[in-house]
Image 1: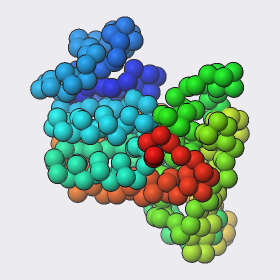
Image 2 (image 1 turned 30 degrees about the vertical axis):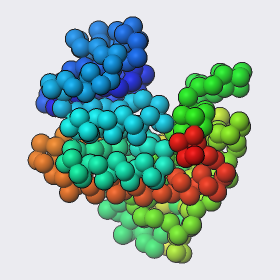
Image 3 (image 1 turned 90 degrees about the vertical axis):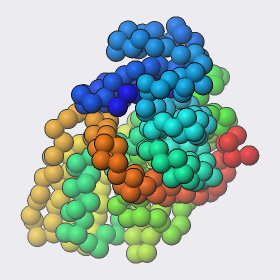
Image 4 (image 1 turned 60 degrees about the vertical axis):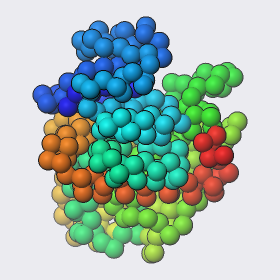
Length: 326
């Protein structure tokens, strides 16, 4: 798979470093508005082609997949353009700004028969899939807690009056989109759509810097904490009548998990032999493309749509409105 990238931030570096561990992948081209901002990345990965015109890169027949790591508000536009140019697309999380954009991208994916993926680490990790399998041992589940708190390196600039993309409604930023989205993928992937959603957020200048998201299911309640303005212990805990499952670390990684049964039995889940969170979804996506497995692709897109529906409900609950929503 010959990959062209949109965006030159640290996430592009992390993702491409892991995708290139698969010998089938090749880093072919970089798009950046300014040539100089792509230079370091191009030198590191020996990429010969740097484009400052996106349309020109999308005309490049050598490229068959585009990785979109532009600001959140541009995911929809860039993914749409790439599919219309007959490219497969990997879109960095969050998938897009709202349900309307998500539904349009999925419809276009089906129409063009391109492959389209949300680059979400959580739901492809082996430990997460093992947790999903072990749920039956502790059912019925009554309480779920997820906490992912990560002090943003851009937050100090925001406090000083700056306008980092991740803290502006114009670029569809905030803690819900950047951090709590991982918790949502974790929960929705296990339990599906909730019956109701409520989001209590710390809001500054129209954007949530942290918050607690409550999801209500029949006979089960879920609390998802996502923070960019403080630090805390990252974990997930699923509590059932027959036992509980404790996940060490953030929901984005699902590094290790332990199943504790009420009868005293324990089962340790430590199946991830690769430290990179992007490695496993990279392999899953490559397999779908190579096998032309569109149905699995569509199944994952329906999951992303469910998560986006919860995000829209949460935004409405907290009074958060992005420019893309207007």
